[in-house]
Length: 132
Image 1 (cartoon, rainbow, N blue to C red):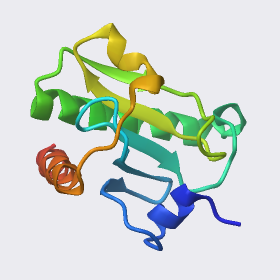
Image 2 (image 1 turned 90 degrees about the vertical axis):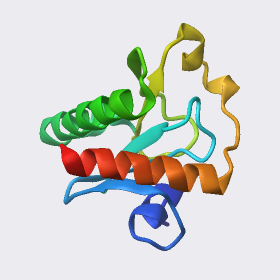
Image 3 (image 1 turned 120 degrees about the vertical axis):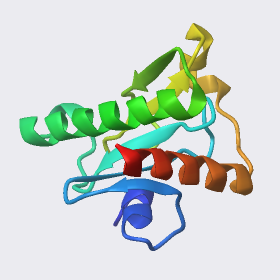
Image 4 (image 1 turned 180 degrees about the vertical axis):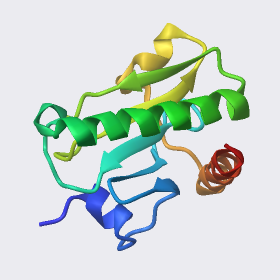
């Protein structure tokens, strides 16, 4: 059965996608740590990131860096955080989020964000990514 991430990538359920290519997709987390929090997810359903191929892992990290630079510009963040944890969904994914505080790394602090705010975040990130 397809994971929720695969359903978002394939457009079967709605998501605020900001990046899509042949290897991965990136979309906003609906319970972000900070505004602009993105999940970078391989198209291939692999449960744990350590089981991804070197090529896929390298590509994901390149996409994370590209998105992270866009997040810095859009949100004026001091840093960009990255978390690879994988307990929520059995599909490898990387959390990428703008941050200015070490407390932002606590996944227990995640909370829902209004759909209109998510749409605005996605539009701003897509616009910045298209400039790059």
